[in-house]
Image 1 (cartoon, one colour):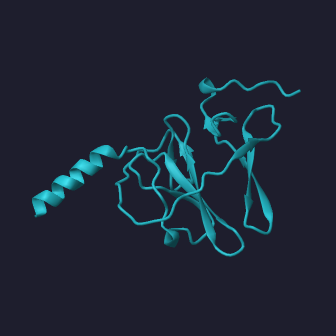
Image 2 (cartoon, rainbow, N blue to C red; image 1 turned 90 degrees about the vertical axis):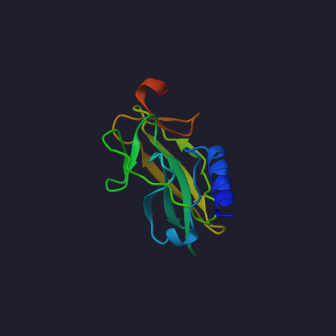
Length: 151
C-alpha cells in the first residue's frame, strides 16, 4: 500500500512544473508586505494588501534570472536560492493588472486594488536597473525591453 502511494506521488509530481506559482494559504496573509512563495524557484512571491476587511494576496514574479530575497523584500541577482517546496491546502492568488506610469526611465508602474467599496492605487518602481514592460506586465532586464521616448 505504501509503495503504491509513493508511486502515485512520484507520478503526480513529475507532471507539476517546478515554476508553477503556488497558492497562498489564507492564514499566511496576515500582514501587509512582500513574502516568498515556496515553489522551489525563488522567483515567485506575493504581496499582502489590506482590503478593508482582510489581507488579500497578489502574486508577483521576479524578472529574468533574478530571485526574490525574503530578507531584502525585492528581486536580486545576488541571492542564492535554498528554497524547499512545501505542500499546502490553500486559496488562489489574484494576479493584478498593472499599468505603466509616465517615466523617462520606464521603471514606474501602478496597479489598482478594489475591495468592493473603494479603489486604492499603488505606485511601484522596478528595482535596480530593471524596466517595466507593459506587455509582459512585469519588471524585466534592460536587454529584454527598450524604453520608448516619452512624448
